[in-house]
Every structure is written in C-alpha cells, then in structure tokens.
Length: 109
Length: 116
Image 1 (cartoon, rainbow over the protein chains, first blue to last red):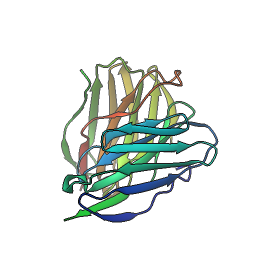
Image 2: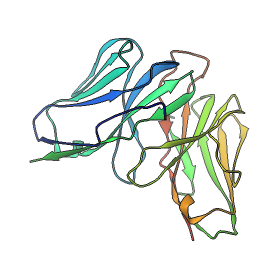
Image 3: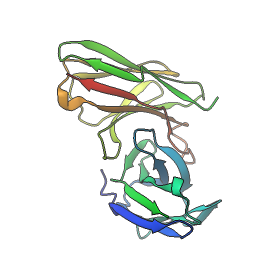
C-alpha cells in the first residue's frame, strides 16, 4: 500500500557494503521503519527514522529525506547471516503501518 | 516483557470449520494489529485496534472477524475460509497511537494457517 517501492532483489559479497533504497508516498507520513525477515519467521525491527538524516546502529544505518519521500538502509561488513528480506515500512497517520514489497538480499562468500 | 505471543503456531482447518487465532502482549501497548503474509510477499495490513476499538479494517472479507477483549488480547475468528486464505497471520502491537513519537511494531512469531 501507499506506493512503497524497493528493489526486488540484490546480491553482495561478504564483507562489503550494500544500500537498499525505499521510496514512499509522503502524504500522512509519520515514521519510516526497516525490518529484517528470514524465510518463515516474523519480521524483526532494525531501525526507525522520523526526522531527516542518518540513524546509525552498529553495522546498520538508515537515512531519511521526508521532502523526497526517500530512505535507504545501509548494511556494512556484510555477513552471510545478513541474507534475508529487508522490508521498508511506513507509518501513516499514527497507526497505519504499510510495508513495501521487500528486498531479498543474497550475501555470497 | 517485550514479547507478543501468538497461538497456535500452526493450524490446519477445513473450509467449514470455525477456529480462532489468539495474540497477547503485556507491554502496555494500546494499538494491536493483524497482518496476513503469503510466501515471498510482504505483510498485508488487515485490522488495527486502538484503545480496544476497531479503527482500521482494510476491506477484509467477513469470514475474518477480529475481537479485542481487553488491552492485552487480540483474537481473529475464522469461519468458512477458502484455500487461498492459507498464509502466515502475524499479530503486532505498538505504543500509544496518539503519540507521534510512538515507535515500531513488535511482532509475534505468527500463526501458520492451512485451509484444506
């Protein structure tokens, strides 16, 4: 819902850096969230942006530009266990959380 | 306690059965959600409860009936489902929905439903 767009799939090498982009409809925006999901499991929370700029959390960083309706998740020092789907979720009007279609990240040795 | 607990983990039901999925949280969250997730697809919002009142129904068929008996519990009653309703059903909760600083969704592990 809400035209939340992400690339479908990306491949990167262990130890490298990867950036996963997300664009969204800005009307009613109230926060952007990144989740990681391994197959058959529930999504786990990675990061949250409500103001413009970069939020850093260990190997993961997330950036937000509200005026552009744009965010990215940056994963550094990739590990094999980072192979998963990464979901961009946007909260609209306080309690409507919609998810993008997800980006499947393949980390290769 | 930062958990959202869902039961059962797995459920198999026929198209004429009536069953319920249950969800519980003790984090004092005042918004609770049901999502449906098919394989290789993102979670799809179904229902949102705010302060025990249904605030959002994303045009979900009436064979799915949500209920919020109190601020900690959320049920999803299932009746006359179709095979295409087979999916992972995820419950989630979040802080006070009136607070614009309220944070992320906390998810349960999900109930995997198979409709025969």
